[in-house]
Length: 538
Image 1: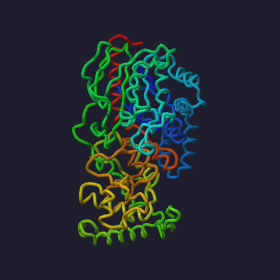
Image 2: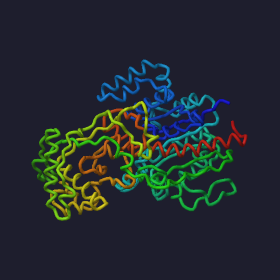
Image 3: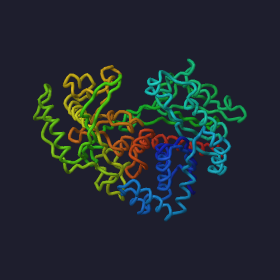
Image 4: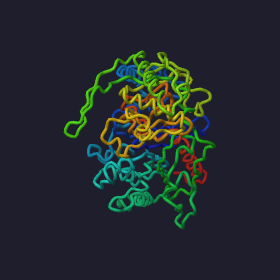
């Protein structure tokens, strides 16, 4: 019997992390899920989404060689030309990809509900058994975002964008939905009312908000914790809202990413879902990025003077020559200086470095990776890809490079990353030239990622600077590349991020880890299988 694929509508899709995980689930050799429509407003993320949709139109063993030509192109502008040529050569698959990946903004007047509904109906083609996935924009709920603005602004439209997601549930009645959001959702309040409680109540009964829809009710399950009981209406009962929190490092993801993920099942579907299976041990950072090519940081500017004028810092800079020789000279000079500081062993920590073979990396590098020892080798690996893309370093301020070297060396010695007070203890020259440096608000402003445990959460802020994502290897003295961040997020190596490097970082930081999505997808697949066995398939 032919496998009937489960249709998916993906909202707020970003670069497609959730969709990638669901698209990877197989029943024998057939895909279980089929993404019919992905909606994303960001231009560069949409390009990434569209290219990946094109990729999925082929069996992995029959991918066109021109796709790999795109991945191997080192120039971003030329790469866009190659993508256009690729689409021209395979017009059928390109048209399907363009129909699937829709650049649109939910909640924007330019895309009214009627247009969204029409597109969804056309994509589903009267399918009644289908899946809705997505994560409404969450900056307003994030702990970091709330600390910056002093709480939640109830006029911030992002607070209510989940209602766009809710409206689609109310109107289109998916069999199952998966909704992702930030940990801060659990503690967020608007007008002293807990946001999570009213979101949960709305999702359980969408017609209370959208009264004209006559929407069915939904049972909301945790993916990490089994319910304490099931009430008379069939709803799962949990001890605490924190039961809906997924700590990714417990499920083989090399990252301490904690997110709220809700699993909604329509009331007529009598299936009790499984929960995620705990990993035997935490996947550490070095095991997933240590087999990538070693790179040196780029040399940007250096500060030649700094003074305060009318309460503001005014600095003068000079541009550094970004050469291997100049980089080596500066890093070795830093090493020599640090070797005289109490607490460091000059022989153990400060051997002279010679790294002319490292280079700055590139949008593509010929390199044999991942290694067989990589715990996610099979997930990352593409036998047809003999290299690595999106692996190019940033240029850093020279003064920051000294901080990076100190941070990674300190972490190597003390098995923890240094706080700003540790920088100040060793040398005043390590302290950032900012008025707020000693305020205590930025104690971990420079954060080296430790090699022997899961990384900290990769966020969109990685697009701003690399201070919070310093590589653990002192000899590389740099922040993480896009590909390293993508490995931490568990994107396969043949997943290309489009656009300028800043946009690439932003896409990676905003995504759901595909390998976590894959594990969730296996649970969702089983729900649909049991539904069919129970004989209540539509």
